[in-house]
Structures are given as C-alpha cells and as structure tokens.
Length: 197
Image: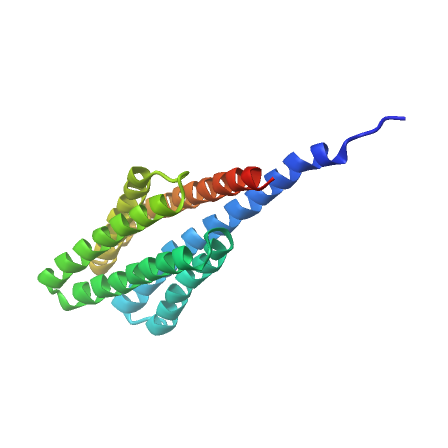
C-alpha cells in the first residue's frame, strides 16, 4: 500500500489555487476601474447614460480594494489606500469637468493631482509591503494615468478610433497592475505565513 503525505501534496495546490483566485480578483478590480472610468467619460461627454450612477460605482471600487487589503495588512494601512484611491476617482471627475468646460488651467491642475496621487499610492504600497517596489509602482501608475488622460482627451475631441487604441493599452496597463498587486500580496502572505509557523 502506498502512503501519501497529503499535507505535502495539497500545500502547493492550495497555494496555486489561492494565487489564481487572488489574481482573478485584482485583475477584475483593476479592469473595472478602467472600464468604469471610460464609461464615466462617455456619459459626461455625450450626455448619454447616468454619469452619477457610474461615479457611485467608481467610488465603490476603493472600498472593495480596502476590504481585500484589510485582511492582509489590517485597518489603518488599508484605509489609507482606500482614501488615496478615492482621491484618484475625485481627480478623474475634476479632469472630466475641466475638459467639458475647456478650462486649461483646471485641466493642468487635475493632471498634476492625478500624478501626485499616483506617487503617493506608490509610496504607500512600498511602506505597506516590502515585496512591492515604489519605483515600479510609480512607473505602472504613471503609465496608466498617462493613458487615462489621453483617453479622456480623445473622447472629448470625439476621436473615437484613436480612443479605442488608447483604451486597449489602458486595459493592458490595468491588467499589469492587477498582476503586480497580486504578486506582492501573495509574496507577503507566503513570507508572513512562514514566520508564523
């Protein structure tokens, strides 16, 4: 009779399964952020749809991130991230309104706020988790912000073909961020689990 140590056999499977679930969750949340941002732009620039309902959905995403992060990092760190991501949504709204009003000073200011917020999110991630690199997060977020601004500008100018190409790249950037987020969370959980044993 062949005896199998079930603990050693199941451990990698459980870890792989947890990683895949985490990856799906964070990829979904990041792509939701991209899609809802685009839907908000379209509703605001065209007047079609309910921009306020979309904005409420956008503001709900930071809370979903916070719930997941709280399980890993606790309340204070996860709440700070929720606040920073909520500010990202507020700055997206400011950018959209500024483009509608044709107020170049307000457009420039909202762009500055979006990049500043990305820098603050990157720094917060690096403080929260040694498995996230601040410079890498800053690059990922800055690239995403750049495409987000280009997407808004293309939609405001009704350059729909260009906007579709930008949005494709914006979605890829969201997926990359979801991947990096998952890797950092998973490495953190693996490391802390090893210490707890």
